[in-house]
Image (cartoon, rainbow, N blue to C red):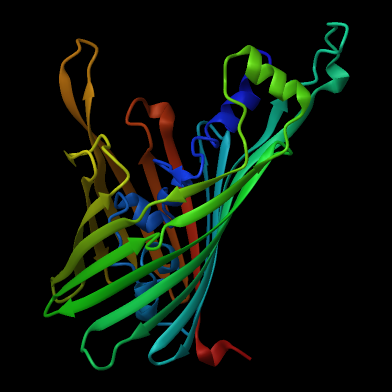
Length: 359
């Protein structure tokens, strides 16, 4: 088992050598906000709060308060991986909003056994150390109403990415996103283009002789400084909300079509260059106070124990409460659709600060 953990985390981050990398920066595809996660990430058209900085920056223009703050914490794989979000958005005027989003996905305190055995072949536990594998990003967002076209909102993100594997290596990256929303009668249509110019991660490595020797012994290529490119992704969405029982009950639904262009993926529709998967979300609210949500996503083809082809679906559910300036959302998601041990519990807190409350 010597050095396996170190090898795993370094290898998965050195897949590209100055070329396009499939599944690059996938930590930015997990999603933020318990509302969206409970609706299977179908959120690019209905998002209307601080989390829009991630889902679709154009949605920031829909926030009703002058200033909003959001916090989320989630744990995956029985608490091994920690996923955190903090965001803030501020209305600049009636037609524009700015926001900032911070995301961190990390596995902390990973044992580093590269120096566990000394030069004489003795196991020395005093030489055992640990390191963190962390992916982090900062998104700077801006949204604006296009007054010349009724119902049109646009937004953009500039994102800075930092990925670090202890002292072994790390990367700095930069990319741009663009989003739009258009209201037509009772419907809202949206488009979110992530990494529209390609997001570039510049990897540098600082490997000790022990790690290089381990790579050589195990037949792995020694990673070298390289550029990793994330290709664009296009998400299209549509949403509508119906009101019944004297407008006391709201029923909102959204459908998204997630289009990727980094080669064939295990999705509903796929070609050698393009893949598409749908996601569906539903939200039922009562008096704008309590909400029940659900969604279906991550629809894939798989094989059962008999070797037959089956279609798997990831179901998510959640609830939310909004009272005056506070909102608390909860989601239960099944990240693997394999066993109940993979269910994750996610909470998000949002606080609206109206202009009259700001000193």
